Image (tube, rainbow, N blue to C red; front, side, top):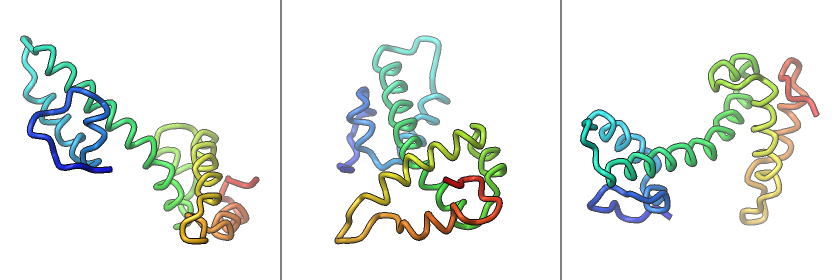
Length: 130
């Protein structure tokens, strides 16, 4: 999926999304810092494309990090404080991600072990009981 870095900043989401996931974040920062009142159309489109790529990447990445935190025994309230939404939304995001990952077959094994999910769900105080 990740192609070689283009020589010009991307002005389309599809191009920005093809860059290493951390690069659009760095580019967005640099672009915002260098912005001037006379920003041209390509500069506006670049910022929009980079922002969209960062949001898309983060949306896919956050549930995996929630899973890692739950697996490590972190408190759901603390995870919610770290991510922003309330605990119910954190569980919903995690649950949607887990439902896909436990059905995803990679070489005959699920991406996430259903037993691991059940262990998290059964842990007292986890807040993710089915």
